[in-house]
Length: 399
Image 1 (cartoon, rainbow, N blue to C red):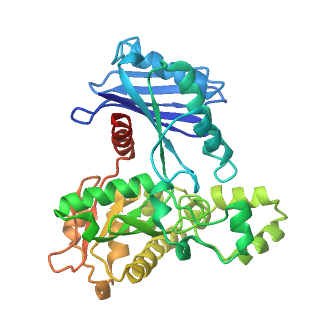
Image 2: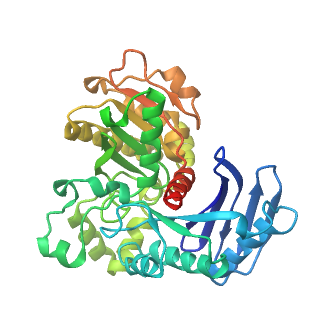
């Protein structure tokens, strides 16, 4: 059975085509610069490629091009879209409406679009992609949506509520939602399998670290708290995002710069984090290289990230009344040994000890990096959100 997985951004349409018999990637690619020109990069399992500029006024044209490269030309991998059993979509914000994987209907698309105020950069493009798929796909091919926020719907009220007047929750749905749920769900399940244990027996802190980062407490397979909040801005220091900041610091800075609310949001989301603190880059690789050469602000940015993560691990161990394992995943989590070491040093009180030699040798592979005498195991586990979306899609349509 062949599943197409689609991940739509505001100006992009990433995709993977998977053969679920063996869970093999047949082809993958990205249509980007939608609305401002257009470009597609497409790669097949055997190395054939398409890399060209295109005209993508909207997501519809991008999806039409996606269909074209999959089915025709030198890099085709299927004869027609009739060979696809279903399409699975990643949706960032499902709020309290969606707590599980859902079959797409016109009503579901409208509901996703209706949540755009909670995720303006993501949900409207998701809805555009869903409608574009519907126009292009054969009528008998079902679409399925998998929500990043759904995994976190198990958080207790005391964890997701803010100290604002309760009416703001009732009227405007202001609460912690959490993100990266698809990734956290994938890696915690992979950890339980690697450890040979039932996930219901484990207390895990999952650290998804990339340009956007979130830390999640997973107790018995369920999310009980997470660092991202109402939006993906909250939590630890990120590539261009502030992470947690005193709200009064926000209003103070806005007044000093004479920012509107939208300008302040842009300042905190796109000009802060690694970029704002270091003045060098939003990329952890650049930060690490500059820090190694003695750049003080780059070193500070790196230390701030490690310190933030360390605090979340400690607090979540307290919330869960125990800790069996810590996971590092995402671009930084999988490929930055210095970050993992910085987070795990001086954590003896939690029983966390890593083997530095093993840690330094691990880049993007599933591996335990804790030492034999570490009471809590520490693992690097590559995430695979597309595969989880494909599995969810297959499970739903099989019903």
